[in-house]
Image 1 (cartoon, rainbow, N blue to C red):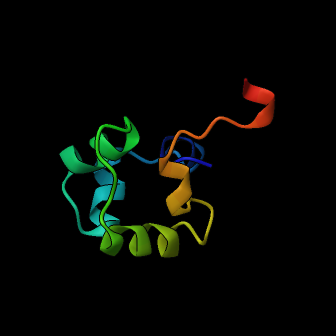
Image 2: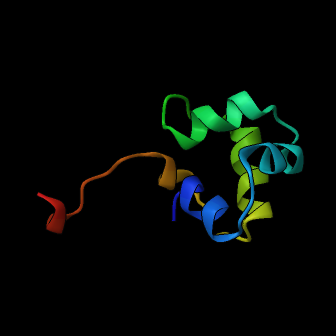
Amino acid sequence: MNLRQYISIKKMTASAFADLVGANKGLVSKWINNTVRPTERYYIKINTITKGKVMPNDFYNFKGIDDE
């Protein structure tokens, strides 16, 4: 699950999620839009807050076998 999906499912705003991880809304928006990837520090916080639903590899747009 990517961060956009998680925030949507939880009916949160980017600003509310930013408060949870200790980042600003602009940075979280960049993560959501895949223009910037979180640092290791934030990967750990995101993984903890989402209880493993959003993992570091979810920030990479890998194509699976079925996506080709």
